[in-house]
View 1 (cartoon, rainbow, N blue to C red):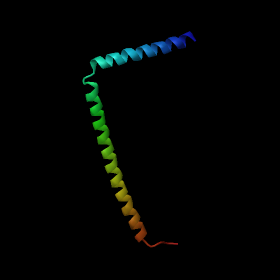
View 2: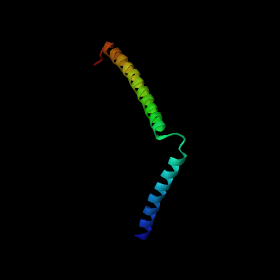
View 3: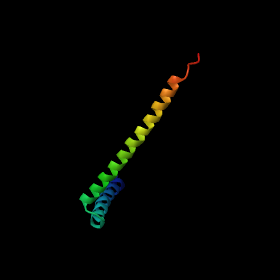
Length: 73
């Protein structure tokens, strides 16, 4: 059990040290980073909506074509 506790303690301390270093050497402020993340998310969402609209149009065209074809029994 002692090894597990030591591992967890090391993991937590390492996380805090790594987080502190990341804050000190970050190239942008927190607000700038958040704005950049929001911008990228917006771009991804727009691209997804565009792709979904294109796919929907393709499927509607295929459905309309299938409805025009005579059924074979």
